[in-house]
Length: 289
Image 1 (cartoon, one colour):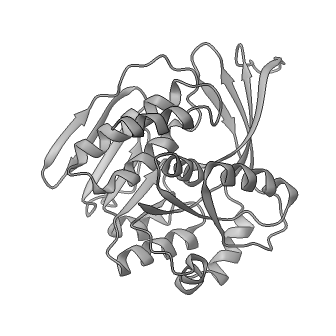
Image 2 (image 1 turned 30 degrees about the horizontal axis):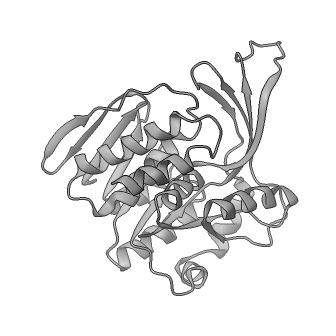
């Protein structure tokens, strides 16, 4: 299963702490890790962990910090399609603190670089994506809305080849007005809000809410799927892993089966402390299926 995932890649500096600091306080971390992060990148790592071919369309460039994310993604088995390989600004750098007792986290991140956005809108289109893919034919597409030109190019590719499109809608982004009419599944966070009517034509809309049941509505009705109860040790990137599992499961028979699969994979992620400690157990889980 080959999946194209278009959107944000960050460099995450992740520290585990006994408690999250209050304003004006300092706390000492007990562990430190550097990993690639961001919605599309996290989903790509999940696709690779599940045994798929993960093609991450993003912006990294040639800044030394980008090499940290690139090396981590390569170790995870993700193929990076860099839309701006000569970009010399640093990639988005996220500061993350994860609380040891329950895995809760706080994240400070600048998001996608607006300057890179402007460059992509001028220079990147379907032809550039075809060249980056070099003949590879993804079977499904996920977009997170960061870097609008990448989202539009990925969706255009999917529509041209009749591939399913999943949208990770964590928060409203203007490009979603162009993307949603072509989406098969829009997966929203609990706090997601969109302009009236924007979601009307979407075949399946899913709403996640952390450990609470995942709700869905589609042409054959609506429902909810329970999330397994687990002892959470690290919630960082759990939603990204969930989206990666959802798009990887595009061939499953119905939407509830896909959601159940994504819930199982994300629940396994949160049971393990650290950005990549969950990959081995998820691979083992896939071997048992």
